[in-house]
Image 1 (cartoon, rainbow, N blue to C red):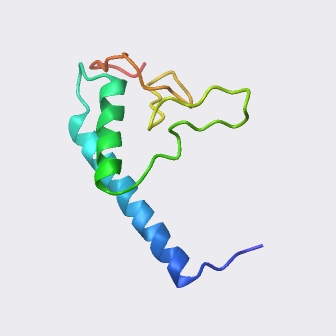
Image 2: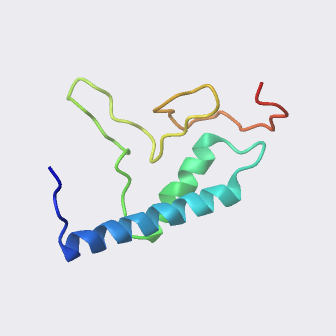
Length: 98
């Protein structure tokens, strides 16, 4: 079933997309060897605050038995597949993907 969005819903989606694009752009400017995923997460949090938005990940808890997700972003690097928790892992220059 296809649900047709109202003009108001489309505008909200457009605004959310612009905010996500802004976060990604600013993170892209900061990615370099030595920066930690926690540092990038802090930048994302600042951008979200500046834009009047909140992270859908931060404190997400699928059930009461789960611990809340601690990050504003999911930072999966290289061999990590999904739900990478931002932390002290510093990015490094890779010379080869193989």
